[in-house]
Length: 208
Image 1 (cartoon, rainbow, N blue to C red):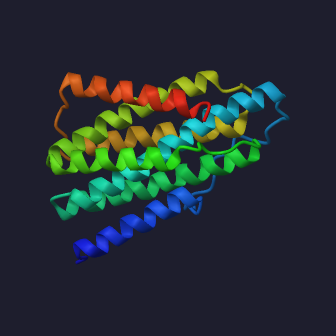
Image 2 (cartoon, rainbow, N blue to C red):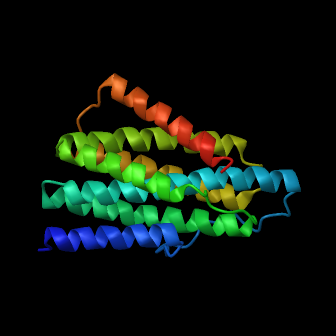
């Protein structure tokens, strides 16, 4: 059994790895065949969209680490850690794809991480059912957002599209797992507030 200090140190290590670009994927990066050369405009669009997706994965790491810290049962803590590990694949894939596109991560990643970590702590302290409900709503909104990106990414950017498609499938699986574990339904005003906050983040990260 790990002590609260041990878990805090693990969370701090995860934060450093997330923000330093040291994340390593356990699964191979999805590919849909060799990607053709992109035009300058296509490359800029793909770069901006993948930067937004990378920010989402930075936030996912923060949320799951915070919720693992505050989980009241060992089973939920294990579930949150496992989800964070799978999200690490997404983080590494989007980071690598940004480099391939000649683009960069958001300059505000430390800010995004800190804000998401605070939200994760608040959700976790509200109780396990509410924490799981937060996961369900977050992952549902992320799945919608990724579906939108699939409609906007250049058709010939097979590499980015393959990554986003796999991420979308994984997020849906996380939502189902949280629902099956006993998630509470979040109040409508809270769901709306989460959606508005996500809009601010994605709009900002698209450029900065």
